[in-house]
Length: 226
Image (cartoon, rainbow, N blue to C red; front, side):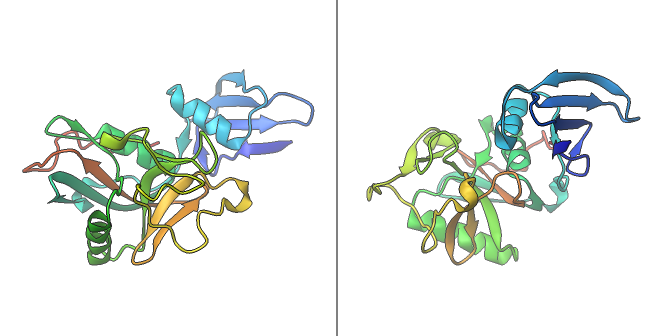
């Protein structure tokens, strides 16, 4: 038996696969009592995770709980940015960013659209001794077609092959390279540039962007554990 989702990585759910059979998700309570199970069809690891999250199923990817006391909130270019230093998987960062609001503006993982914004983000990360941060870009839908997942740029294609010179991108040399065939998420390396990485295996800090200025930290600050 091959466990696609181990108990060490997820809480209260296991997905198991036996050769020749359909992957099945088993749900447990805190006492390890099985609550129910469901067949997952012929999905791979990424498809299973995406299916659970998109349907609001209780798939819990372990990471560091976000601590609002550690958050750094600044304004730049008419937008608010909120930096969270905890390292978490992409799915945790995505859903936590979408849970936050400032002055009625929903948060989203930062989308960098200019050299000036890139320099601002670099400076913010350096000031807080962070080497990497998640960016809100992905090519999960179509390989080598990178789109932003939130904010004013939601759904916007910002890089593809052949490259569109009109769109801003800041890739590290020889990136994106889709190493291993499953690098569909995006990080920024402080002082270097962008790199495509594995959405499931990698954990990085989070920078949330909001579309307007704010005077205080938002009140809906209960961290989500995803």
